[in-house]
Image 1 (cartoon, rainbow, N blue to C red):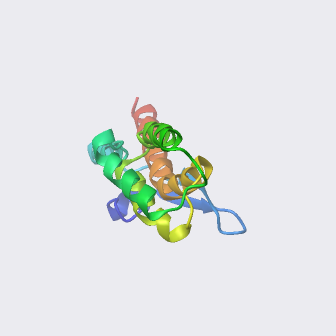
Image 2: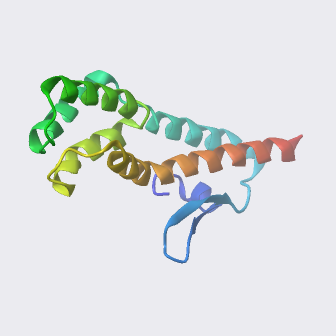
Length: 148
């Protein structure tokens, strides 16, 4: 919640399981009505941070990962088809998260990753931001209902 002003962050609470797995973000109190514009600005910043990467951004990172990992007996055509499928799926994730996962995956595994492996890491890095955005949207909705 470092990306939020302290007074907005103090209105939210992150939930964790007994095993310390992240579970979500709750709205624990509402800011004063006059702070509605600032909360909306925080939503805009989070939405901007959730913007997906373009194919042009992802292609070099995907190609580099391909060169840094081993593939299990695929033909060049199969590898190209797999990379195209991954490219399509990666474009659904925040740009910085997708690029980070691609840049660090070769340090995680010697082999070309399955989509499930990448998706697990993508989800891990994007989950808090996505949950904060959802909580901020709920906060604004509750503030608007309160003010009607």
